[in-house]
Image 1 (cartoon, rainbow, N blue to C red):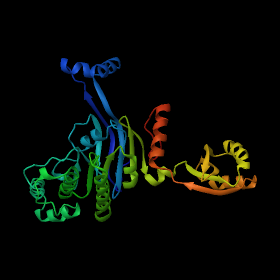
Image 2: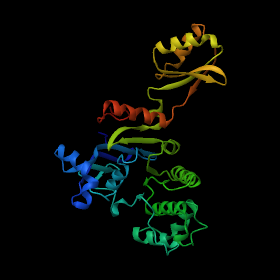
Image 3: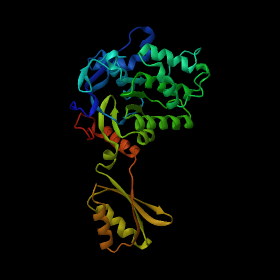
Length: 352
């Protein structure tokens, strides 16, 4: 369970959330398999979040990563007080709170699901309304419109806005509401590639310029890797791993492409690499027509492996380190879950 630290803007401890199964003839057929499963286990509800622990470090862009249905939106809604929790504790800046809702949470803002603005009002008029309702300053509206790139469209009716413009207006509303912690649930959903790129650029700009902490949920691995400093991965409502992206990707893993000078050494190299200490996997192939191997090794063993290859008389034209992607890491930990199950564990470790 994470400790409450002054370096964390928020800590979640032991969060559990379940939904009571629906009853009645109209819902029966849709819910029958879930009902049977729960009745066999003696439960009358379905648990979707299981004793979830994590922390949100201050000043970071924090990725909340998991497959569709993993519990990301439910977790965010529970944190924000939009759903009741079964159990668990929330700490905001070291102080226990019931949720991030209420007047005492003026530094918190959120964009959950689709933007909800009045079609018949302009973008600026919608922000006037948001500012008045949330106790903001109307004088800040031009500033936030400029930040999100809507200064030239501020006086158009909201019904004329594209999906991407609507998302940017939601971001402007968030900036009016609070600039300490911003929660964004799948902010690029429904956007075309250009809109997705614009949204990522906006998030990076807000984090860099304002020192804001941004908690962003997504199932898009490349998006999280591009945006986030810190990542929390959940699976079926349980924590799998959390930590700095740079540290997680370097954890127990290095990948090298080994390019041979001659095809005569292929068999010798293959036999050695498959038995070498610290080598986790070996794949053979070609690199620009030259025989090559891609090897995954334990952290810190790459230089020793290179020395061994040279000492055995295997001529090389390349020994090239490759960066592991977040997608590689995610697929690795999730595949382990399928084999070994999932338990809560220590911070920064795969919870198997």
